[in-house]
Image 1 (tube, rainbow, N blue to C red):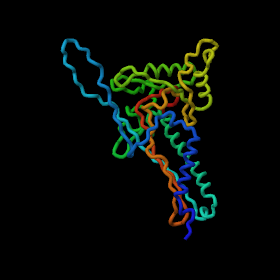
Image 2: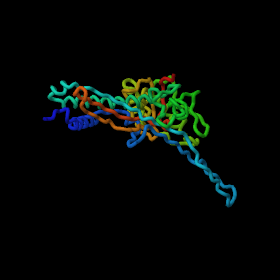
Image 3: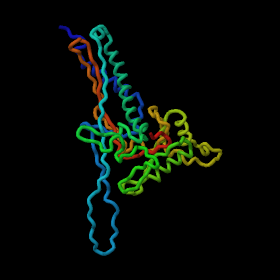
Image 4: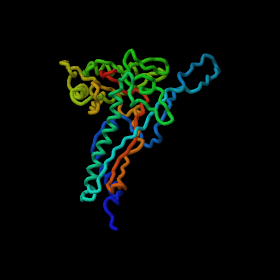
Length: 324
């Protein structure tokens, strides 16, 4: 008996994967520019425990003084849950048999799933920023998964929001407290400098209270007026931005302006993109299936994938935004 197109799903699957990756290369998402992408992960999620340094060296006061041996200190535990995302479509028997261009139809279908894949990743990662000031936290910060319960629940590992305000500071392991968000700010030269100094100086200490280099390479904003202001601050070459003075623009080139269509909170963010502490874990790349429905003789097509975010620090600070 002669075969029909629905009996050769492998050929269509190959075509779907090909178009999916071709289309993906054409899109320019932001999540993989802001987060460090980690591949090859396994399981329902993951846990990583921070290891602190041994502290300050001890100055010897007498000759032949004994060395003081200590156990290494343990820092915060970090969790990530790998969320599952899927979609499917049913193609009727007649629709398949009478469609002389099934391959073209699947190409169009795989293109829409490419866009949905990017949308899901952009939505999840931007949620970290959009809900970063929520006082009660948000599910995107909850890394609980099979066999592991995230003790901080919907908040960061230290049970504080990602963007903590003065009066609701987060505490480091040495007992010092900090905030990395200032409410009520609109982006301009003055507020840029305010957050820049906060990020690179005021809170630039590690868990043991030692000064560190808190890098800035990106000023992240919504599309529109904030992005235009970011470009004006960072790219003005003659004179001081927003001023009649001809002073040198000291902020030129200190960071790159970057807009993100998925941001929905009226805030601007300063930090380092693809920082080790901001990780996007790709647990399972999109997996396509195309097969015959045994009951109707129609066809079914679906896609399923898994990914999540692991946050191991605060490499971003925020100006403006909401905290409710």
